Length: 152
Figure: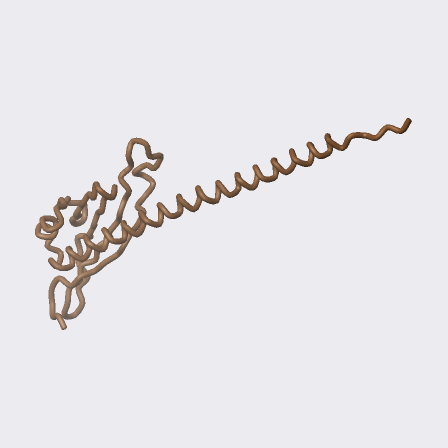
């Protein structure tokens, strides 16, 4: 008698390996999509932070460093610091806090005086977020405006 072996177990093994390969490929693709989504969210947050920082800086420049008027215009608060002044504005709809810091001294040249400032934007952490306030600003900007002297 001549017995032939069934090829069913080999076929079943081949199908099992193919399912594992496709499962691995799906896992890799899923990780790529999650990474892409996180990258998109952080890019959107940085873009909004840049917009808000520029807004606060331009208002302060328009009032030539008059912090009381600038803070009133943007509904911010003036906070005296060790060496100068600071304006803080919270954008709750965007989850951002913008701080414009100036040193006490101005840069004075022969015929003009300039004030420098650093604008920093922090994300406001919510209860579900793992991000902490101590992580540092998500966006910084350095600006300067003319406070006195000739304007050309």
